[in-house]
Image (tube, rainbow, N blue to C red; front, side, top):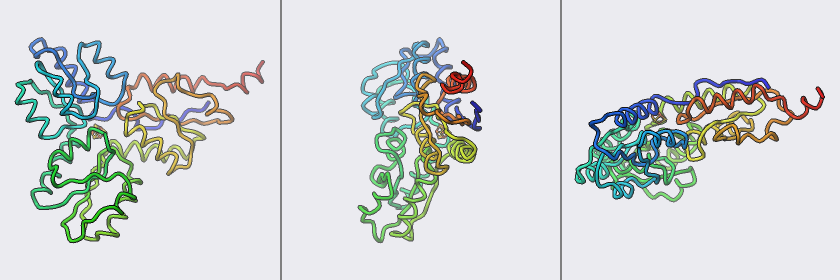
Length: 297
Ligand code: SF4
């Protein structure tokens, strides 16, 4: 098959730096053991398995405060998704060594939320329920922030006369949030908009939509729990009108998806290790399909 390697794809700077930090602490003989990661360092099981081999314990779960209660000694690593002030304070109270791998783009959103709360704003945070990033961001000013997920959620709000701001999670789709923001502006024209979708997410989505136009089908390599990988599938389907499928590894590719197709695009979420994407690309480049194999026989 013809394979279009969509670029940029795969690891973003936030993930690269977070991985580097965890490896450094794991290799540091002075680091207090055991070493725990509060949540998955990134939403990708291959990465977590690699850390396992370094002796780093990944505590799986989205509620950071609950996870922290499982740790009584050693070092705790905060993931790129960020944590709330309550989690930071609790880690200190417990006397743990802290390694903070929060992505600078997430920290920027935390700073913004604190500033807006101090200025008396009610903040609507567009994000995914149950994802650790909203938990950390909203935890900066819990009395001032409300989570909304979709445009439909706007109808249930009653915020007339308030000083309002809307802030987005870093890994959403621009197209999705535009609809929600539009609905918010219709109801509350005074609302101030802060688009916090990070550059890495935006560039990957833009490239996927642009390149998908030249493809019959697009394969997104990423973990089922990775928000940004799921958003890549979504934007290809909705914005480029092409079929798109999420695969964790090459083994998940269903030959049916490729039937009658000639050009396949490949992209990867910002938490997907490159070797896994490379395997998918190599498999597809060598793929002839049942029809071609039969005609040569
Ligand atoms: Fe940072 Fe964006 Fe990467 Fe998340 S996806 S770690 S916010 S650069």
